[in-house]
Length: 342
Ligand SMILES: Cc1cc2nc3c(=O)[nH]c(=O)nc-3n(C[C@H](O)[C@H](O)[C@H](O)COP(=O)(O)OP(=O)(O)OC[C@H]3O[C@@H](n4cnc5c(N)ncnc54)[C@H](O)[C@@H]3O)c2cc1C
Image (cartoon, rainbow, N blue to C red):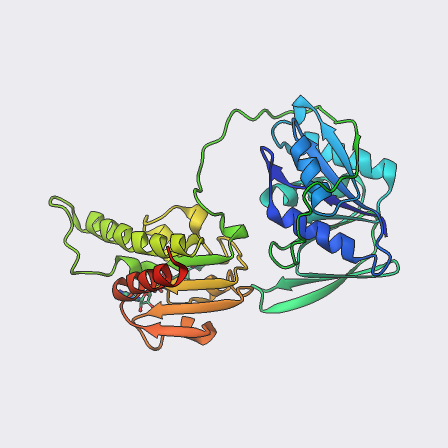
């Protein structure tokens, strides 16, 4: 099985799930591993290529060109399609990101193939590839057999083990041509998400509408009712953020919190937000609506803090704390600080 692994990165910072994809590709060979080829596209991305070798790639095909400085579907897909049609891999693996969803779809179309997205398991037996992926808001897992060649598969982040980095490990880096024709130009970026990314986080602490519910907090003078609600929610999210920070985690939110203007959409977890897979998910003041749960089904452990004993979130929580988050969350932060010596 000739496997390519596309290393997704933003300005030279690789998506950790790219290394998970490399680890998966290496596992296909069983006791006699096959050559694993990493694909690195960009401009000035030698370090990404070297890291790919350190994470287990045997060789890297590097398209390094100023025209690839910014990700654009046209240039990246054309470069990928040209490489795949000349080198004929059986399989191309990607970490699932917004970029790779677009890139894999566009290139698969070029090559008259298909894409299976968001895989949580991939079995390869001889020429047979069977992919497992969640459907119906992750209530069901479907197994799909893929026969097109090359088969494009995007892998759900944190669904596969990340291999250890072997510093100084080397291999062949081969320069390949970039396709540079594009209709679009990237004019710039603005940051929407700060801190640890939800997609890669091992720990996520999320806040819901409940973070605004602390009537005893006195707002600054002159705020109207809506401003008071948002101000209170900001105090609540400060507590959520402190707990996340002490655990080295990211801050998430329910849609109700996002819609009410407490926190940006980039923090939203759920059906219409991000689907996450942390080791630990702490839900604070979140009721556990089905659309929220759709985003956290792959979390290894859910802890819920809620005033309402009957909140549905407790049905999916391993541990539940019934109480006021404004009391419980700071107490947890203090306890973790002590335990972790911070
Ligand atoms: C098509 C569609 C897509 C959607 N997509 C998403 C999505 O992606 N993500 C998402 O989250 N939702 C989504 N929703 C919305 C979803 O249905 C719920 O409305 C939303 O998740 C509720 O958010 P919440 O739990 O924060 O608010 P609520 O349901 O209002 O719950 C607030 C909770 O906080 C508790 N609480 C209040 N005060 C405190 C306190 N001081 N201490 C502790 N607990 C307290 C309450 O007991 C309650 O359980 C979607 C809905 C639709 C129709």
